[in-house]
Image (cartoon, rainbow, N blue to C red):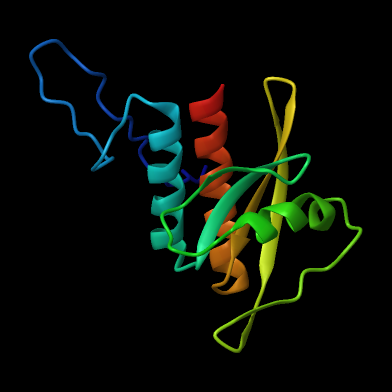
Length: 139
């Protein structure tokens, strides 16, 4: 009989009173708006994107990563792109930028999360982080 080699299961230790807890987040906020901006900015940094934003179903800007860019028009077209009724054609500094959009439902609201720039795998990663953060913070 052959024995199959198994990789040992590693479980992170549970928090115990008096034991230091490792916090992966460098900045925290108790306010949802600030926490969302920090989380979206983190997604931008990790995935090398231009910006990540959240728009409601009417195209109103809900939150965005830290940026100096005016995102009102991008937020306005995000639900239209999410519904598949249009394809975004966006240029920044003369270069074509791709837009990825993911739609989620949080507390009976439809929200559209958009990631602009980067490569396709970076946009997918940024969107995944932004979706997880939005669900965690807004729920």
